Image 1 (cartoon, one colour):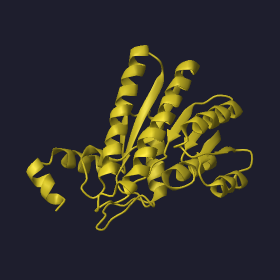
Image 2: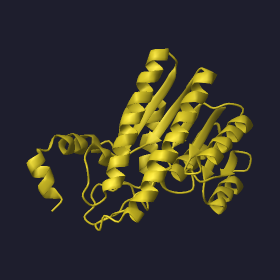
Image 3: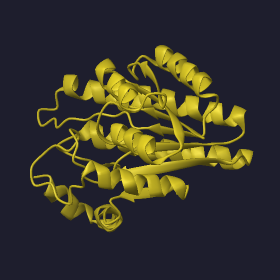
Length: 241
Protein backbone atom coordinates (compact mmCIF):
# COMPACT_ATOMS: atom_id res chain seq x y z
CA UNK A 1 0.00 0.00 0.00
CA UNK A 2 1.41 3.37 -1.05
CA UNK A 3 1.98 6.00 1.62
CA UNK A 4 1.34 9.53 0.39
CA UNK A 5 1.52 12.91 2.10
CA UNK A 6 -0.07 15.97 0.48
CA UNK A 7 0.69 19.45 1.81
CA UNK A 8 -1.97 21.94 0.80
CA UNK A 9 -4.82 19.46 0.40
CA UNK A 10 -7.78 21.68 1.26
CA UNK A 11 -8.24 23.28 -2.17
CA UNK A 12 -7.33 23.19 -5.84
CA UNK A 13 -4.80 20.72 -7.19
CA UNK A 14 -3.82 19.44 -3.74
CA UNK A 15 -7.37 18.45 -2.88
CA UNK A 16 -7.89 17.06 -6.37
CA UNK A 17 -4.85 14.79 -6.03
CA UNK A 18 -5.94 13.65 -2.56
CA UNK A 19 -9.32 12.63 -3.95
CA UNK A 20 -7.78 10.95 -7.03
CA UNK A 21 -5.43 8.79 -4.99
CA UNK A 22 -8.20 7.90 -2.54
CA UNK A 23 -10.45 6.74 -5.40
CA UNK A 24 -7.92 5.10 -7.72
CA UNK A 25 -4.87 4.20 -5.67
CA UNK A 26 -4.22 1.56 -3.06
CA UNK A 27 -2.96 4.19 -0.64
CA UNK A 28 -3.05 5.68 2.80
CA UNK A 29 -2.88 9.45 2.59
CA UNK A 30 -1.75 12.09 5.04
CA UNK A 31 -3.14 15.54 4.33
CA UNK A 32 -2.45 19.00 5.74
CA UNK A 33 -4.07 22.37 5.28
CA UNK A 34 -5.41 25.36 7.15
CA UNK A 35 -9.11 24.53 6.85
CA UNK A 36 -10.14 21.93 9.40
CA UNK A 37 -13.58 21.39 7.87
CA UNK A 38 -12.13 20.50 4.45
CA UNK A 39 -9.78 17.96 6.00
CA UNK A 40 -12.65 16.49 7.97
CA UNK A 41 -14.69 16.22 4.76
CA UNK A 42 -11.92 14.11 3.24
CA UNK A 43 -11.68 11.88 6.28
CA UNK A 44 -15.45 11.28 6.39
CA UNK A 45 -15.61 10.72 2.62
CA UNK A 46 -13.11 7.83 2.77
CA UNK A 47 -12.93 6.53 6.35
CA UNK A 48 -9.66 4.78 7.11
CA UNK A 49 -7.82 6.30 4.13
CA UNK A 50 -6.87 9.75 5.40
CA UNK A 51 -4.72 10.95 8.29
CA UNK A 52 -5.11 14.69 8.85
CA UNK A 53 -3.21 17.56 10.47
CA UNK A 54 -4.46 21.14 10.53
CA UNK A 55 -1.43 23.36 9.98
CA UNK A 56 -0.38 26.62 8.33
CA UNK A 57 2.72 26.11 6.19
CA UNK A 58 4.13 29.47 7.33
CA UNK A 59 4.40 28.17 10.91
CA UNK A 60 7.52 26.21 10.10
CA UNK A 61 8.06 24.68 13.56
CA UNK A 62 4.49 23.40 13.76
CA UNK A 63 4.64 22.29 10.13
CA UNK A 64 7.67 20.08 10.63
CA UNK A 65 6.10 18.55 13.73
CA UNK A 66 2.88 17.85 11.82
CA UNK A 67 4.81 16.20 8.98
CA UNK A 68 6.67 13.97 11.44
CA UNK A 69 3.40 12.91 13.08
CA UNK A 70 1.77 12.10 9.76
CA UNK A 71 4.75 10.12 8.49
CA UNK A 72 4.79 8.14 11.76
CA UNK A 73 1.07 7.39 11.56
CA UNK A 74 1.43 6.30 7.93
CA UNK A 75 4.38 4.08 8.83
CA UNK A 76 6.76 5.73 6.37
CA UNK A 77 6.39 7.71 3.20
CA UNK A 78 6.67 6.94 -0.51
CA UNK A 79 5.50 10.25 -1.96
CA UNK A 80 5.18 13.82 -0.74
CA UNK A 81 3.23 16.29 -2.88
CA UNK A 82 3.90 19.93 -2.04
CA UNK A 83 0.89 21.83 -3.33
CA UNK A 84 0.72 24.73 -0.86
CA UNK A 85 0.95 28.08 -2.60
CA UNK A 86 -0.66 31.45 -3.16
CA UNK A 87 -0.41 34.57 -5.30
CA UNK A 88 -2.34 37.73 -6.12
CA UNK A 89 -2.37 40.39 -8.78
CA UNK A 90 -0.68 43.50 -7.42
CA UNK A 91 -0.94 46.44 -9.85
CA UNK A 92 -0.28 48.95 -7.04
CA UNK A 93 2.90 47.18 -5.84
CA UNK A 94 1.53 47.09 -2.30
CA UNK A 95 3.97 45.07 -0.17
CA UNK A 96 1.10 43.91 2.05
CA UNK A 97 -0.21 42.00 -0.99
CA UNK A 98 3.17 40.43 -1.73
CA UNK A 99 4.10 39.42 1.82
CA UNK A 100 1.78 36.37 2.13
CA UNK A 101 3.06 35.11 -1.23
CA UNK A 102 6.65 35.36 -0.02
CA UNK A 103 5.86 33.70 3.31
CA UNK A 104 3.99 30.77 1.79
CA UNK A 105 5.78 30.24 -1.53
CA UNK A 106 9.31 30.75 -0.22
CA UNK A 107 9.60 30.35 3.56
CA UNK A 108 6.92 27.73 4.21
CA UNK A 109 7.49 25.95 0.92
CA UNK A 110 11.24 25.63 1.55
CA UNK A 111 10.64 24.25 5.04
CA UNK A 112 8.48 21.45 3.64
CA UNK A 113 10.77 20.68 0.71
CA UNK A 114 13.80 20.45 2.99
CA UNK A 115 11.96 18.26 5.47
CA UNK A 116 10.89 15.90 2.69
CA UNK A 117 14.40 15.49 1.28
CA UNK A 118 15.91 14.90 4.73
CA UNK A 119 13.22 12.31 5.46
CA UNK A 120 13.75 10.49 2.16
CA UNK A 121 17.52 10.54 2.63
CA UNK A 122 17.14 8.89 6.05
CA UNK A 123 14.65 6.41 4.66
CA UNK A 124 16.79 5.68 1.58
CA UNK A 125 14.07 6.23 -1.02
CA UNK A 126 11.09 8.43 -1.88
CA UNK A 127 9.62 10.97 -4.28
CA UNK A 128 9.13 14.70 -3.78
CA UNK A 129 6.64 16.37 -6.13
CA UNK A 130 6.15 20.14 -6.05
CA UNK A 131 3.49 22.13 -7.88
CA UNK A 132 5.27 25.21 -9.26
CA UNK A 133 3.99 27.13 -12.32
CA UNK A 134 4.79 27.82 -15.94
CA UNK A 135 4.70 31.47 -14.84
CA UNK A 136 8.02 30.96 -13.08
CA UNK A 137 9.81 31.02 -16.43
CA UNK A 138 9.53 34.83 -16.74
CA UNK A 139 8.68 37.82 -14.59
CA UNK A 140 5.24 39.39 -14.33
CA UNK A 141 4.33 43.05 -14.07
CA UNK A 142 0.86 42.12 -12.83
CA UNK A 143 1.93 39.61 -10.15
CA UNK A 144 5.65 40.12 -9.52
CA UNK A 145 5.96 38.08 -6.33
CA UNK A 146 4.02 35.10 -7.65
CA UNK A 147 6.16 34.57 -10.74
CA UNK A 148 9.37 35.33 -8.85
CA UNK A 149 8.58 32.83 -6.07
CA UNK A 150 7.74 30.17 -8.63
CA UNK A 151 11.12 30.78 -10.29
CA UNK A 152 12.70 30.34 -6.85
CA UNK A 153 10.90 27.02 -6.41
CA UNK A 154 11.96 25.72 -9.81
CA UNK A 155 15.59 26.62 -9.13
CA UNK A 156 15.45 25.14 -5.63
CA UNK A 157 14.10 21.84 -6.92
CA UNK A 158 16.95 21.66 -9.41
CA UNK A 159 19.37 22.15 -6.53
CA UNK A 160 17.73 19.37 -4.53
CA UNK A 161 17.89 17.09 -7.56
CA UNK A 162 21.61 17.78 -7.90
CA UNK A 163 22.15 17.10 -4.19
CA UNK A 164 20.39 13.75 -4.40
CA UNK A 165 22.25 12.76 -7.56
CA UNK A 166 25.51 13.33 -5.70
CA UNK A 167 24.37 11.00 -2.94
CA UNK A 168 23.30 8.35 -5.47
CA UNK A 169 20.02 7.77 -3.67
CA UNK A 170 16.81 6.55 -5.37
CA UNK A 171 14.93 9.72 -4.45
CA UNK A 172 13.08 11.47 -7.30
CA UNK A 173 12.20 15.17 -7.51
CA UNK A 174 9.41 16.20 -9.88
CA UNK A 175 8.68 19.81 -10.80
CA UNK A 176 5.07 20.10 -12.00
CA UNK A 177 4.52 23.36 -13.91
CA UNK A 178 0.82 24.00 -14.52
CA UNK A 179 -0.49 26.63 -16.88
CA UNK A 180 -3.99 27.83 -16.06
CA UNK A 181 -6.08 25.40 -14.01
CA UNK A 182 -9.65 26.09 -12.95
CA UNK A 183 -8.89 26.93 -9.32
CA UNK A 184 -8.93 30.07 -7.17
CA UNK A 185 -5.29 30.63 -8.21
CA UNK A 186 -6.28 31.38 -11.82
CA UNK A 187 -6.63 35.17 -11.70
CA UNK A 188 -6.92 37.81 -14.37
CA UNK A 189 -8.73 38.36 -17.66
CA UNK A 190 -8.18 36.69 -21.02
CA UNK A 191 -7.01 33.37 -19.60
CA UNK A 192 -6.59 30.60 -22.16
CA UNK A 193 -6.16 26.82 -22.10
CA UNK A 194 -7.78 26.67 -18.65
CA UNK A 195 -7.84 23.00 -17.62
CA UNK A 196 -10.38 21.40 -15.29
CA UNK A 197 -8.83 20.28 -12.01
CA UNK A 198 -9.65 16.63 -12.78
CA UNK A 199 -7.78 16.70 -16.09
CA UNK A 200 -4.78 18.43 -14.52
CA UNK A 201 -4.67 15.86 -11.73
CA UNK A 202 -4.77 12.92 -14.16
CA UNK A 203 -1.78 14.30 -16.02
CA UNK A 204 0.08 15.01 -12.78
CA UNK A 205 -0.49 11.46 -11.56
CA UNK A 206 0.86 10.16 -14.88
CA UNK A 207 3.98 12.33 -14.54
CA UNK A 208 4.46 11.12 -10.96
CA UNK A 209 4.19 7.50 -12.07
CA UNK A 210 6.90 8.12 -14.66
CA UNK A 211 9.07 9.93 -12.08
CA UNK A 212 9.55 12.79 -14.52
CA UNK A 213 11.87 15.61 -13.58
CA UNK A 214 9.72 18.36 -15.14
CA UNK A 215 6.12 18.10 -16.31
CA UNK A 216 3.90 20.79 -17.87
CA UNK A 217 0.17 20.56 -17.18
CA UNK A 218 -1.66 20.33 -19.41
CA UNK A 219 0.91 18.95 -21.83
CA UNK A 220 0.24 21.64 -24.47
CA UNK A 221 1.78 24.14 -22.06
CA UNK A 222 5.19 22.70 -22.91
CA UNK A 223 4.90 24.45 -26.28
CA UNK A 224 3.63 27.69 -24.75
CA UNK A 225 6.43 27.59 -22.17
CA UNK A 226 9.08 27.24 -24.85
CA UNK A 227 7.70 30.24 -26.75
CA UNK A 228 7.29 32.25 -23.53
CA UNK A 229 10.85 31.54 -22.44
CA UNK A 230 12.37 32.46 -25.82
CA UNK A 231 10.42 35.64 -26.55
CA UNK A 232 12.81 38.55 -27.23
CA UNK A 233 12.92 41.00 -24.34
CA UNK A 234 11.73 43.82 -26.58
CA UNK A 235 8.51 41.94 -27.28
CA UNK A 236 8.08 40.45 -23.81
CA UNK A 237 8.32 43.84 -22.08
CA UNK A 238 5.63 45.33 -24.35
CA UNK A 239 3.24 42.53 -23.38
CA UNK A 240 2.94 43.98 -19.88
CA UNK A 241 1.87 47.42 -21.07
